[in-house]
Image (tube, rainbow, N blue to C red; front, side, top):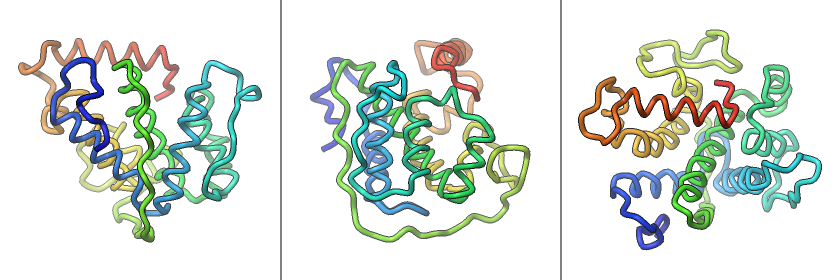
Length: 225
């Protein structure tokens, strides 16, 4: 079983480990635009690059992905995983021109899910969770309706959207939103419902204190969002 509580040096809420397990399993399944083996290969590329993020890119020991991926997909997985502070619109447009906007968004969702899970393990002082075994199956290739241009790098949901823009960024691939934010909401607030609330009375830290910590971590990680 992935994210076995027996590995943790301190107690971890069951809802958090359940969310981690479910989102982790999602990586190995066929998504909307990438197969299970391709998604696991993307996660592996991001992980290898991220653990060497303090080294200059040209001196990193990268190896080759286990599954054939387009050159721009390999580049994107590595860059989003380890060097997000160097992303810009020109780079994204070049990647999207080859991969397509939805494939790019799904790739990004796999990378950020992997990074968040790996960061959790690092914070716990344990080894990274082994990547899930890839499953067979074909992508659904379903593009959601209600997408539009609001000045982002990719189309996003513009109809009936009430959530934060940080979630909207992945809305071209709704399954990617669910995979990432299921896990992040559990880590951040406990439940998706609590994540939407501006006042918390169920946590040792208040919502403003948590937001301050999150902003500081983002700044230290040079998150451009």
